[in-house]
Length: 342
Image (cartoon, rainbow, N blue to C red; front, side, top):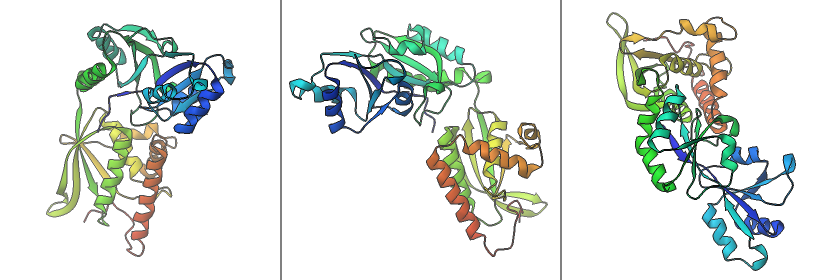
């Protein structure tokens, strides 16, 4: 699937007995202390970032990240003893994250016009919010993970006069249309991926591929199933194929596939072919991007390292486990080339 818009953490600015407030929140919710950038990097949707007014400033200023919604924290204070009551509470703008790809200004400009939004900069989300203010932040990164400040674009839209829930639902209903506005020619690519494996571990490689596509949020799988290809006249080869609907160029998908073809030791695990319509996408033009600029194996090894650097740590771990399992199953089978099409 593809996530295009989601909510962000709530930022609270509290004044009062910092030690008592911090102790109370930490006793009820899972909390960690961070710098501002660290808190922003770690906080996800439904969590809160708390800043205590009157504390140290500069690099020593610490933010408390709590795994709880803002209303849960405020209810906790309201029901607590007087000592932990905040003297004042200021709420920063609500945050929404929107993913863009390609021509970002076309997307941001259209959203700004549709919602009569005021343009601002990323640092403006730390200003005290006007009533009902919502900050829409933009990133090119997938939204299925925590986002760092470095992942965010500097452009921010401030929307007023609409509730957070209504704006979120409205953007979600239009998200795919807005996202497509930024694409070259405003078109998605429908590609076919064919899996060849002379050891017959098709579904292992399918699961590896699906895990990567989901981790990168690279598009949507529209269909899949078994089929046949003909490496030579009258010689049928069993394949597993899937149709991918993606906003990424075909060459980028080819690089992902080549990175999945090779294991950590450089061994060939599988053969992926990529088609756009009837045209087979070749790996020949990819060599210029490789550090080694060598043969297919060295290019694939480089692309594997590039791919793994973009994945969640848990996804990298699962892929490595799949690789080891695949190689163990080959022990004693004799064949060494998965592209051997029988």
